[in-house]
Image (cartoon, rainbow, N blue to C red; front, top):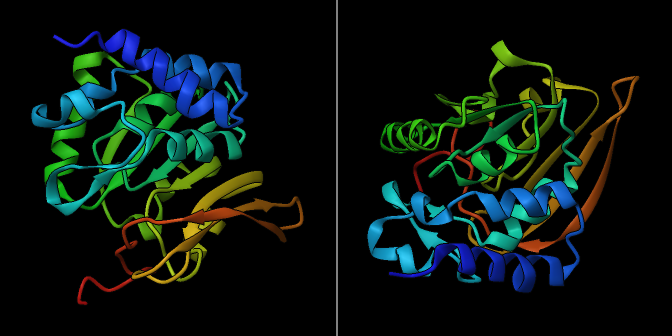
Length: 218
């Protein structure tokens, strides 16, 4: 039986802290969340590898470093309300649940929604809600959000998500074509409604499907 606690510690030190992630609350959260719970049992031994892994419905769980990079870039604080678009297996939402006040994670695949909800109940993360819907439209019922993280790539940032950011809110999302490398973008909403945008580097994500994203038809 693998020593998952040791694997988590090694992941944090070698893959994440060594690459410049410094937020101590985030590093502690990554040490606590059992990533092996969020992958299929066949992939449990690979859960802490430096790479993405397949999950159900043709989706993936992101590389641990990318999860950490996006969360740190969003500057999530202990009183923040967070929206995650593309809950997937629920791993990133669980990590954010340990650094934020409340997390709403929206997912369009019913199979993934059911599995992520079951995992949250099993590990008792009561401040994380998994909801089903079109993530490109956000989740207006919980807005405004201090941070929004989008775990899929769109050709542009959906206006609905920008509208649901609180003043001073941060949005982190991969932007670019669906068939090649994208840019990870951080957008900050100013008090007057204008936005600042910065590029954080190249990434590769699955396409963001929805009314304000890509069509599911290839």
